[in-house]
Length: 407
Ligand SMILES: [Mn+2]
Image (cartoon, rainbow, N blue to C red; front, side):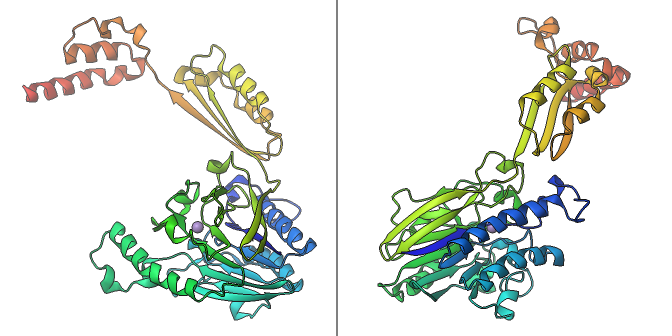
């Protein structure tokens, strides 16, 4: 059996707003988190050692990362080159540059001819020699409108029509690759895509434009022993029958709060022709913690907020505190005390939400049993809104005009 490590969606250089500057290194702590987590994947690959590392795409937030971020990434992957571990870097949507073709942020590895490194920026099959036998990897990078279509093909087409055309073109191209596979050699499809069966995660907010969706039927092929995906940040297997497994490992670190409750990790894989065992391996990543407090009805909103904070494991976490209070209760919130209560967190944000809710019971004249014309109802409403007193006369006047024009 060949040993393979499959990871994806590193997004190194993102999540900086959740970090702070480490005074000892001058670096954002979230960059350090991402480097540490990626380092743990590479550690495992080298310790075993694996026969192959597959990266499913989205190395950085965009195709032009700052040099210090690019270098942090390169330093980790270089360890694989030093250990003679073949590595495939697939190009995701965040790795593509709008100008030029291919993966701008990853193609440097090909340009420099890093030994054992393959950059997957085209649909192609790579036969990789390892000490434990050969393995085939079919790379399918993120598809764009220009991948398989020309401008005249798509002129005047809606996004859905372009998607349809693209799938029509993709199918024979994939088919040709599949038919050329050596049936005696294990085969993996490595693809960065949104499959139509996937549950969305943060990537739907991160993507610049809406991307294309690939039908799962293109991926469920007996010729593949394993389908290694990238793009969706939530780990999932799209084919529980495992014939073949179709796996998103998910992102290796939490990119934003939408990933608060997700386990993060990579896929450990043992593979031979017609045989595959895979395991999701959790990574100990920094926790995110949302504290939502509805203190609207509380007599002592400060106390309610402090109690809610005390209940949550905020130590070293990225925390956001969101509390709802009445506008007249805001002055009773002691913000300094909240800062003190949150100081165990790695970083935190505090977001007060002022609620001005009028409970129905306090305006019996607006109850279901009463019949008021709209103008009377407005006047009754305004009578109970002290904050609107200064403009209430104008509002009534405006309403009278509106009602008048309707009649
Ligand atoms: Mn992606």
